[in-house]
Length: 524
Image 1 (tube, rainbow, N blue to C red):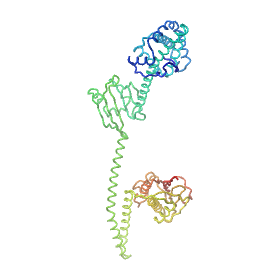
Image 2 (cartoon, rainbow, N blue to C red):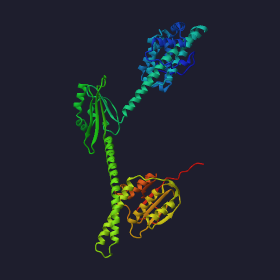
Image 3 (cartoon, helix red, strand yellow):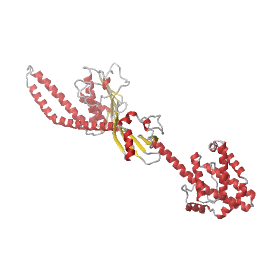
Image 4 (tube, rainbow, N blue to C red):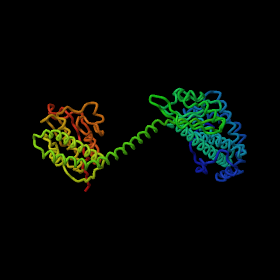
């Protein structure tokens, strides 16, 4: 009964939607009848009404389908006149069955089937209530016209009970079918959007179902009913020797696993393929294709990082071991050079050796600073205090602009190490006496800029990486240490390339911005 029906009051309205598994048992049906109060007396009254209803089946059906025509949603189910005629006849048979019985297990299953049809046709549940209301009213009207008042009242009560019984069966089946449909729809959505490739093949090697991961390896125009080769790149089919492996899986009934199938590039891609035999009338084989390229690349990066970490630890250990001998050599050279006459011809040679030892000592010191984590000690301070101490330590003449002396909560030693490195880099990048500037504020930020040649374009992306330097005599660790220290204190540092409000004749070189975390505000 594909039609409407709003909720109506009855002797047992709470039973509407009573859940019964399609294929209701006799015990369940009898329990439901008992709850509603549908007895042999009601069955007898319905049968007495049957002859009068049989004379009015056409008007009842006409009334019913006139209501359907008034509802666009319900009307959409009736596709043509031939179908309307069939539904007209089936409605009349259903009404006679409703009044005749027997109201047994077979009748209950037919009622449940009607609920399932509503789901299949896409009709909302409310239409079953609306349809049942129309039929119930028409049957009660016939009882009023053909019986005395008392019999008509009792017969109408019997009509209400049998339609309630029918509704319980219909709506229970409706909900079960609707939930099943939603579950199947959800499963289909999940399967079609899995980030892996799955093909289900029948015994002819044709695809009966497939996932549809977007932007992957399946061909977009492939569809079920085609051979699996229509879905996969020919290079992968050949590289995995899929024809032979599929035949082997079907003959042996055993899973065939191809753990790593490379697909030549560039770049080379890697796939893991599983061929799983199945026992199903539509599925004899499951072909699972998973791309491993990203996983293998990530593993490679992890291995490289681990190797670099081991090398870094070894380098730090070596730097620690050679630091003391370097200090001894430097001290000995200093004593020797200071004890020589100024006109000794050997003195310039030893001075150059001393300079190289100092350079080596700085490299070892920078390597140790980069490799070991800082011991941090946070406290309240200001940008001005940090800047003045850094300028004193760097020993560099600069122009300081104080936009705002912003209070900050940070580790002063870490900030000063960063600023000293930046100032010394700026000094080394500039010719003697060239301008170097530092700006404080307006936020918790410090700017260091110079009038040097700037940073070459090819170094801008990796400027803060270890051993990257634009200087011929640098260690390549200064800016890497700056970045490491900034990360440790929760700050950020980068090379600024935007507009700066500073005299343009002075700002021709590099501009670095160190942004510190904002001060911690403790609520009152």
